[in-house]
Amino acid sequence: NLDWDLRTDLPGASSTDRSFRIDYVNNCFLKDGARFRYISGSIHYFRVPPAYWKDRLLKMYMSGLNAVQIYVPWNYHEPQPGVYNFSGDRDLEKFLNLVAELDLLVILRPGPYICAEWEMGGLPSWLLTKPDIALRTTDSDYLQAVDRWLGVLLPKIKPHLYHNGGNIISVQVENEYGSYYACDYNYMRHLLGVFRASLGEEVVLFTTDGTSASELKCGTLQGLYATVDFGPEENVTEAFMLQRLYEPKGPLVNSEYYTGWLDYWGEAHSTKSAKKVANSLQKILEMGANVNMYMFQGGTNFGYWSGADYKDGYKPITTSYDYDAPLSEAGDPTDKLYIIRSVISKFQELPAGPMPPPTPKFAYGYVSVPQVSESWNGIAVDTSCGFCSAFQAHGFMLYRTLLPQEIVESALLSASGNGVHDLAYVLLNGEYQGTLERDRVNGINISGQLGDTLDLVVESMGRINFGANDSDFKGLIHNITLGTSILSDWIIYPLDIDTAVAHAWPPTAQSSSGHRGPAFYTGTFTTPGISEDSYLKLPGWTKGQVWINGFNLGRFWPVRGPQQTLYVPGSFLSGSAINTLVVLELQEAPDNPKVLFVSRPLLNVTYNYTHKDRK
Ligand SMILES: CCCCNC(=S)N1C[C@H](O)[C@@H](O)[C@@H](O)[C@H]1CO
Image 1 (cartoon, protein in one colour):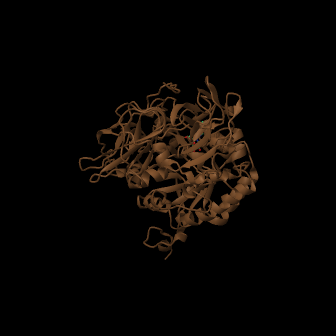
Image 2 (spheres, helix red, strand yellow):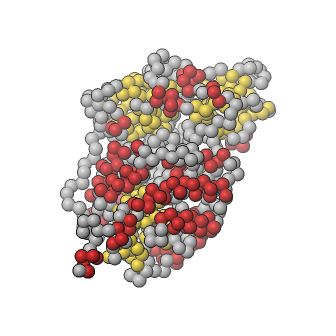
Image 3 (tube, helix red, strand yellow):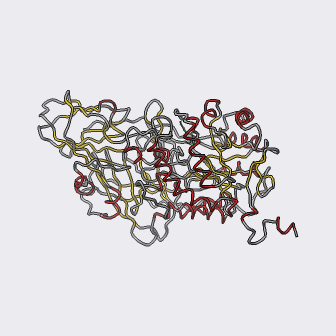
């Protein structure tokens, strides 16, 4: 009898009964033929340890959300051309299945460009081995790499589409393409073709752009449903009027409703008033619009994954991606979450039961980290690649040359054309001289003898993830001059520190005196039989990188701020074995070097600091 065939809640209902479509008559989405409005939140699986994926998703479900929105960073899954990684913390399908288990739908945003304050906006930096590549256009080399990547990713996605029995209800093509200078319609048409060929005709494909005519002009395309993004500062009615210019019929959608904002090193911590966020959210919901809150759960830019913007100079993003979001970086429900949840409850029944509490935090206290031996030449320098054009995607490179003449007085060592990308720590015969910094410090004075070893340890702080400067080459990209002469005969060493830290550690520590210039510090600690979350504070330190049990926690820069603590997930710690800490300090460590585990984050203390000249 007919109704049995139409019901889709029967066990084993075939996937052909499932559908997710746009209703252009009633201006809404239809899920299995019934009117459906999503209330969604962004979470980035690549910014949350897998051990905590379920914890965060459950809290999003208990907040009244019926969907989550995720990006897929291409560079996270294809580290080298043709080499793919979808395992462990990169297991996208495991994450999608977990979301489905929690009865949440998915809005997927596979790019291939995603922005997201992520290294190079998700594009792999190996694309830049073709130096003049025109990213995000019909550049044939770029499209060839895109097609190969999507040829791997999209077949993995297809079975997870809603009408195929999965929980992905819509898929975004590219990301705010209207904000990009190129405005290459054939690029968007190419992507539309690839997505349709791979995912089929039924899935809802859409674009997202800011609410300006110029952005929507270049970012939208016939065949892709146009959506907009805007925060609580914008007028909701006016913002959706812009969407109506391109989609006179169909559901209203804000794909990125900003609950907070990003942080740059050296600038004040960004926050958004919970009250304002809730008020504008209520207006959005009252209009029957679909909304995704960006971010609902921020998380952390572990390792070297943070990106950068270029606005009056290079502005790197901090390690914390707390975003002042409803769920904190550590996944703790904030007041903002409860205020948003009460707004949602006026429109959608909340799941029964309590909101899971914050995960327990523990202040493990001080850990002494005496300096390791003259570590720089012993541990990290890989002399096997003296003259090759070393390709290393992230982190640090060592550029070495010999002084071509004696410098009796001091001479200016200078990075012409701002060519240090992004900081260079200068050593003469291993002794720290000072720091050159992109857009901030273009020269320092040094003096030395003919033939002295001049080392520049060059650090990438993350590739630009938004706008036209997205071919952000790293290292020394222009000449370095000493006085009036151009220095030459450089030897370039890739410094694979993470491998060294993960395998050859911990070496015996040497001295406990403070130190200037790049050096490693290491120490061990045990916990009282627990492995609860914590936050690492580095009082008296300057700038560097931290590893715990081989996990790269990310960058610290307390003399700049606003971030003063690093989130330490309990899943990175051992409650029974010895925990090993490794600190790479690039400029100046405190005497009697130690670090401090505290139980609360500190993300809003900024200083206006450049660099101390050498003593
Ligand atoms: C100052 C430039 C900021 C560019 N990014 C913008 S507008 N955003 C839109 C972008 O789509 C998203 O990925 C995030 O990057 C977000 C900011 O968090």
